Image 1 (tube, rainbow, N blue to C red):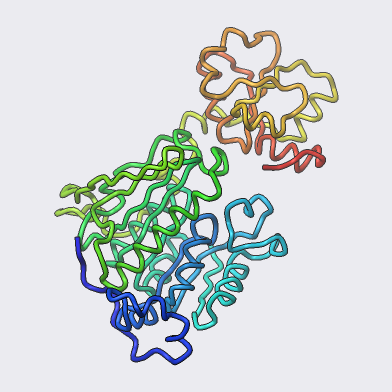
Image 2: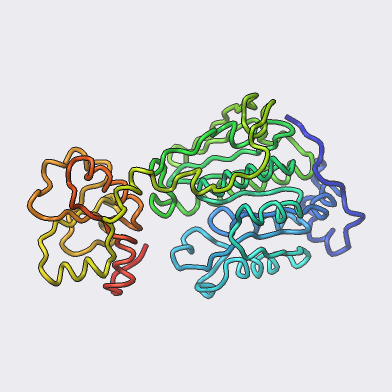
Length: 391
């Protein structure tokens, strides 16, 4: 679907800008007009992490005049495997400030605007209204639905990307010309069904593969060149090195962008809508949650217990709590008969989400005294035994 350019061209390019963007200018489809449109464009990157890193760097190199960055986190050493906009010396720094410095090192002609805040229902409309195009590089469903809903309500197009292990997806959602994210995913997946990158992992270079596609689509939308991924979902499998394009039609019954929308404003609580933890897990964890410190006290006192790690084998190899036994959450129902009835079962995972879900399974099977560890092995490594690695 060929679409008109999103932004008008700037008045002119300086001699230095012409020199800098010369390889764009000699492409007939971009040329002087397209480069002027990039200069006049205002693009917001939601996140300066895995996808945000290549997105910001290549948008800056391409000559997008104004780049906004929404980011509230700080740089952690575990980020550096994929978040290439940051370096070792940036560990502990604001991600937004680190990203800004890299962007300006790439292209000093870019105007960088920082929004060092967590994107939420209170600020998203005001922030988005300042930009022509949104590029979403977030890794949680609550923010994805928030970004989508705000973009549709404001009439803004946005480029979406998603990565997990060796797989990636990308599309352009623009309700005026095609479907929105809710047309593709009307409801978020059940809690715990789709792990985040922090729990499931991601091949670092996959960020570059999908991020570069996002930037390509952004340039196409801004300049009116080519056929952007409006109404199409691009699916990438890095292991097979294959790309598939799947048609996505606008849902006439979509509650947000359909013929008779029922969502006419942002919903109150996107975290609740996406249910990070299921209701069953919340009920199971109520009154049955202990801290890493309490677990240490139980172990030191010789309290009879069965410590079960519900993570995956690859995570078990990285770090574990001494004395634990590995039973991945998905395998737990098949191993219930092996669990003791004469001592308390204690579950843990990386952060406490999967163990809460596993606790619901145990409670349903009659293990009424079972508990799980808040914060999981991460809490143990940061609060009890700081010699252990955190991943």
